[in-house]
Length: 496
Ligand code: B12
Ligand code: SF4
Image (cartoon, rainbow, N blue to C red; front, top):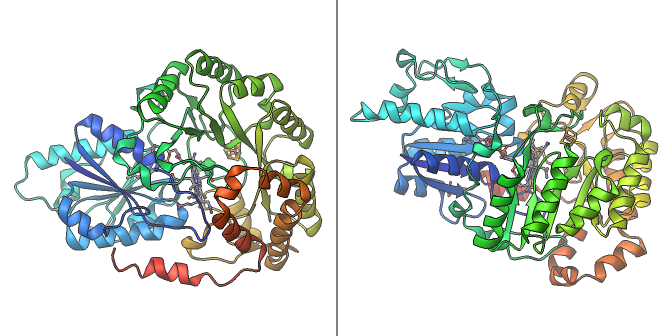
């Protein structure tokens, strides 16, 4: 079958990176293993319109990914496709996994795959292919007719039968053995069109920058994190399997930088030690790699970090979130400030670059608690302090708290982004003005100190990225200007 996988266009109003979508890279890989012809259309980097492309390619099935700020564009994409071609349209990804009925009710969306997608996607494709065998002329309306009972027992699906009824099937169990998955199909992407992993700090040709996921899931349930919509069970690939993919990235694809995207990579310290030794033994440690997401501070001993540094680790991040002890307890992070201090000390002592993820505007915050967060970031003094404004994503505990006790200031999914200098809700004495003021103050106080400025000026990357760095600084430090131009540009993108 001809399969089309789409990442809908959504440029954030900040200068961010664009990377090949790992979820689609996995779906592409399992489809190719099934024997399908696969095209990935990443609207963020394509020049052609989706409609034009679909008319040429005439896919048998279309899969579209959607996180929260992307979901409306996913619906628009589905509508644009159905105007020119009849094929079942399947949506998957974090947003539709939490609110499947919302998207399934849209007239041009047929099926929602909830949660981890590979097995359900292949199941849907198998069922479509069996149906196609008996057809001389395909129609999605006929395919979705409940008389055929095609999806009655397909786990992890929410779908709409042709009478408009939405069916919500039971969940699918998470993939038990991640080693059974093929490696992400990067050859389906125009790799040369992407930026690298952390363009603000490094300058690497996008085509040579790759992501890898060595484990999936997270056993923690922090109140602000959308991870809670994915399986709680943490699962890891075997070290051999990870090393084989790493070799493929380095030797076959000439990777010059690798980003480990695991949500909680160091849940099992022994596994990470084994991986570190194996990277050294297999002479893969000359290629720098980065923990893109925060690793757990309570499981980051100096020995472990020293070994990982030898194994090529260049930079790592910790989810610090807040400098206030009470707020830290309230978000269920299950870590304390001294442990975080020690983790940063360990990382710096072994020569690793550090990133601290901080949040401003968590439920219960006041001017004082947010100032503590800024002060704590300054005390930790990472290379990068990443302050984001609390954005309550559906499916998280914070979303429920805000709905009960606060006042949401946004009602458009496209505004669910957290670097726009705009507070997303108010609660108690925490007004939008206060959070926005503290956000600007955080960047000013942290970055306009002599040490971060000198540190940045000393790096080649800073000078190579100068125009971009000036743009980022202007957006961060100057008061917010209306950004509706960007939103309008996306919505009125008539080329769709
Ligand atoms: C890397 C990453 C990024 C990168 C790159 C994104 C990219 N191109 O992939 C960058 C830094 C750009 C980024 C930005 C943002 N991100 Co981000 N990101 C991640 C991260 C850490 C890993 C994504 C990943 O590769 N996962 C691994 C793959 C295998 O999983 P997956 O993509 O979810 O796909 C699987 C399933 O969802 C499903 N599936 C997905 N799509 C489809 C489609 C079909 C048809 C089917 C059948 C199945 C299916 O099957 C896939 C395979 O199992 C996740 C956390 C996480 N663990 O997923 C957050 C995460 C996705 N991001 C999140 C957020 C909030 C954002 C931002 C909005 C943040 C912001 N700046 O405001 C932006 C949005 C950017 C945009 N343009 O869309 C949230 C999403 C929450 C939500 N409700 O949408 C997550 C879940 C983090 C979190 N825990 O809160 N992100
Ligand atoms: S913030 Fe990190 S530790 Fe907490 S639930 Fe999300 S992924 Fe897990």
